[in-house]
Image 1 (tube, rainbow, N blue to C red):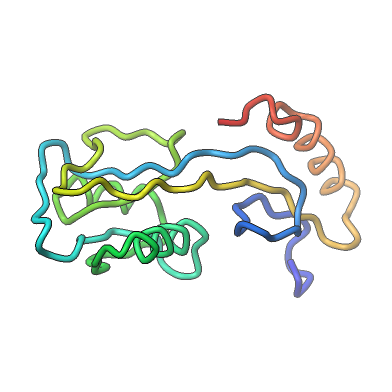
Image 2: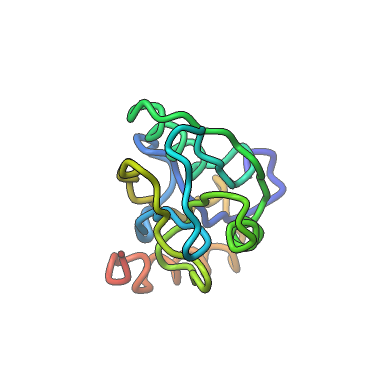
Length: 152
């Protein structure tokens, strides 16, 4: 977007950032293979999105603030791959609550995992939008997403 190669982006923004127009929010949820138990004496095995990632940063901050030990055992560029790795029993993952969680459930560890903040989805347009991009931007902002009616 900043290099002029894109007209419009829909994505997550970090807490405190002002760039973009808000569309909706979604809770982040901890997930692991159903029935999988974790040893509270060992670092939490994490499956996270690759850097840079808003979700990854929020998870690592929450764990650090809670004083919990962790180790990234797998990272990927997609939530689907992270969920697949979790279904395979590699560790704990996090994803927005609106995504499907087949075969995954809240992980069972000795101590509760820290609560995670909601992620905020925004639309960000280039300084000068083409007519089609401006139309799409307007549609997004006028949709249930842009009016907050679909907020989690």
